[in-house]
Picture 1 (cartoon, rainbow, N blue to C red):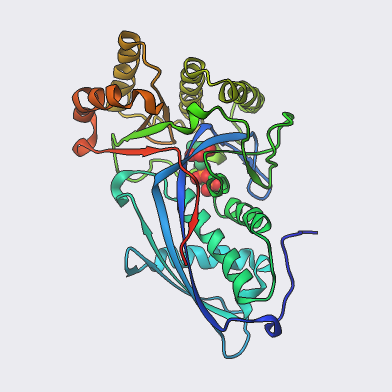
Picture 2 (cartoon, rainbow, N blue to C red):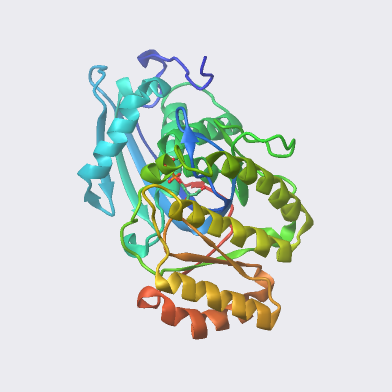
Length: 362
Ligand code: DP6
């Protein structure tokens, strides 16, 4: 039985109308989720930094329906304009998972969503938007109906719901460092159904910066859904999942110890492994662009010359996330302006950092 399903009726509706607003960040995976099974469950554990600046703000309003109905009444606006495509996607998600939110029978919903980053920046927005959506829905349910769900339980349901909408979104509801997926490590508290905060992380990693070099802001060449599907018949499938889980253990020890050098080695290896998996898939994808490699080479040269612990990771696309502690920010910023900016599309580098997770405003 799913413990997240609360059954309530219209009699428990205590606020006929109301408004709620959440801001939720994107995250950058250090150990990647790549491959899933069953109902949105990951084939290996992933670990990410929660970001601070790249985020979605969602304003929700609700009003009670005149007559309860199975029809999902939803109006969705993106960047101040009605967005039918996103509305249909969210409606389809809610229809598929309607048992999670009995409130859908009794309420009309309106959602206005905006992102802090430009649409053309090629930043995956599903983590920030789907975590904001999940948090908003869970909060509306709790506030409009007399449910009295405590904060911790609300966040648990939100990570569960966010995961169903987009796997990586499950990690975004937590501050700083989060994991998702079952693991034999007792300190990793996440399961395949629920993400969780990673505890015991050394202070230096909480100061990390993520300068996102936009090499190409265009549409993703391979959607996440198609990408995960590539792992189903992948020749290195079993080896990958075994290895990723081992890397989680190594990364966890690094995160605890504060060893920023070992962090660089591990995070870069893992990023290239993700791209290696894509190159070895059938069909095969090369998601890096010439400037992705040029940026990587510059980072490695600069690290060698300066002795500074900056490194890169990649998402399922050509943009490069440059990770480094706050203590070397000044030197890295100079390097970015002189060496990296010319390689970025329209000179675009988005400066982000490890953040404290979602915030509720209303
Ligand atoms: C490469 O979470 O976007 O960013 O569950 O199908 O929505 P869906 O996939 P998604 O996949 C993210 C893949 C990744 C790695 C990661 O964030 O862990």
